Length: 299
Image (cartoon, rainbow, N blue to C red; front, side, top):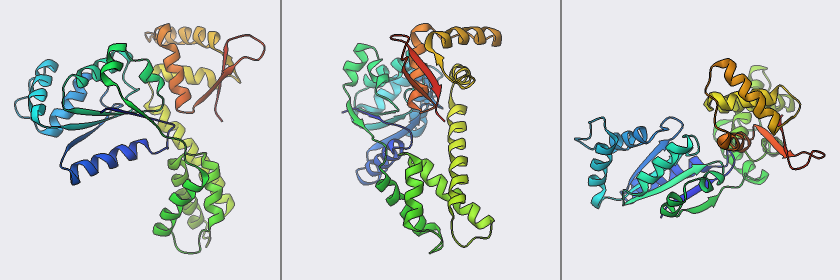
């Protein structure tokens, strides 16, 4: 059985995938491998990662087909669970190649992690049919969920009476369902309180810490994006709002000036959806211009 895990950043998809692998390998002695497709974004590099982790001897030859054949032989009587995190990052053609070849291996269960299920629908029909994945949606954490998570961290890491439940609720509301932002904000707020020689974390420490955490998250996400994603984002950022057709026109002009081969028009929507899934931009129908989209950066 294959699975497709999707949901916004900070909803626990990667943590769940890694936890599942630990349980399978430690308790049930099943082979399990985690692959970050930001770093391994080609079929060859994914297969190389699997070969290396499984320590399959005799697969050193730098040929993808040869490595797949050796891997298939190894897995003949051995089940493998493979977590493919950020499966939306590889280019469309490469993503199809990765999933198609892994689905044909046999004895392999795939857990694909992605911000959106739209990338699943965008796969070639033959691959969707082979994958036949169970779709599991990760909703953003509720305020009470985040409060519970933060209370565990605070009880472990912070001095008693330097924080209270109201403080954790404030951070949880500001984090808007993102556990990573909430945890980073609490950590930064504690740092600012200590730096200012306060015996308790105060609202001004939370406000400053939240801004820092939000800026760090945006920088982190942007650094992981392709040059084309960054160009699109910067164009949108430089304007209060911009029509989809105008964005495409300006993007082509900027790409030409930078000497970058522009993406195809058919993949333009996929790139925009990626920025939306990462909550970097908003998209909505124009109110007075018919069925066209208007983009703006999320503040």
